[in-house]
Amino acid sequence: MVTKTLDLGAVYQPHIYQRLIHESGAKVKVITVSRRWGKSRAALFELIKAYLDSLTLPVPPSMIPPFHAWIVCPSYPQAQQTWNELLSFFPSEFIIGTPKEDTKTIWLRGDAVGNRRWGLIELKSADNPSALQTVGLDFLWINESQDVADMAFEKLLPTLRSPGRMSRAIFEGIPALHADHWYRRLWLVAAQEGRKGYWCFPQEFASVYHNPMLSPDELAEVEGDRSLLTEAAWRRMYLAEF
Image 1 (tube, rainbow, N blue to C red):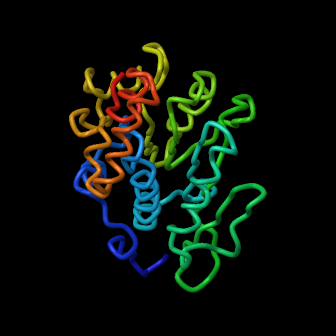
Image 2: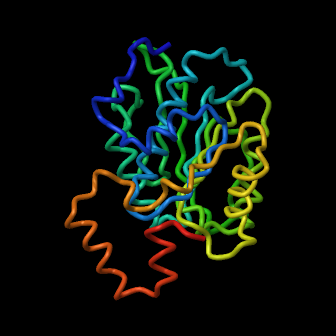
């Protein structure tokens, strides 16, 4: 097993509201917040934490690979930034060989000295739901959930129903446009129904103004966008209002 531990503080210092995400012990986290809030960065480090946790857990030999994670984006063009950040922030000492740019895959170590393949991270596109083969996942991260169609979600949800897997997930994005969108329904399940293992980010801390890393000048630009967007669009993107 990998014996070296990762000091997340060396590469990532979450702001006070991102910490709420990391402190939650829920298996399924629904994060509906504003643009420029830091949701994708928090999701990335949830993935890293899940991988490190997997190294301490007993895994049946039938689990191939022992740790399996998907990052699902609305389309491959939208996924490029997520892929770039994954390569930049995932600790290189845990990566086997060279990440595959063409297939958007990364193999991770399970052995401190060798190259035993323990973990696989795959970046997927949701624009062709029929191509999403249903596998069993330890970690599912859906990026920009509001832009992922219901048909894709119907293929992705069963990936969290596989015996022996950790079945953790984080769904992040800004509010969906329609009340019957799966992302909105999922948020309501986490927020109102109190389903065991589900958690949603507190809406009172979801606006762009709750990112303390933004400068006064950057927030002034956000305010200036009021004259360029409809009031509804501005409030949806920057206040995270449904």
